[in-house]
Image (spheres, rainbow, N blue to C red):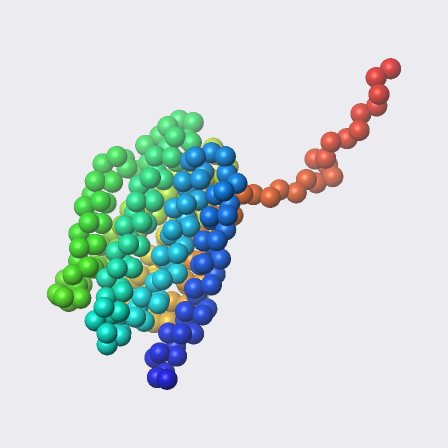
Length: 232
């Protein structure tokens, strides 16, 4: 077994289980949520967790000598980008509706058009970059643009939202997007030494975003109802 293959297996063992665990909680919590908006939010988070868990395995399969297997990154990466931006685009209107003042978030109604144009171009470049490697140079700038566009919008929505469940979930997901942005920019240069801990922290952020939809609060003794004397 070559050293590079062994390192990829170690990376998979370390990073995949936490993300799959977060996806399990997303779909489990979804079954218990009454609101359709909450259920849709949990479903999106579950799908993002699954696709993110395939990030490193897809890189490993991309080095395969088998042509079909080596095309795994051309399938996983575009799907992940599409789902991430679709989730962001569907989240911003929800965040705005949960703001009592209904304030526009970074003029998202206009920015989303540019975001979808970049997303479509990025997906096309990722799909055909295995055939035309020269097109791969646009991937990193396009990814950086999308995360710079999406992460602040989600975090602003979290700050303005008066819905406690959405506010906490948006906050953690915005942190995940910022961390993924860091992974895209720095991970390519520093390799697995940085990528593994960053992805583990990203998995924790996704998990917290999921669990924020089902908070468990403990009552203190001061908050517990006190017995009232019987009426005279």
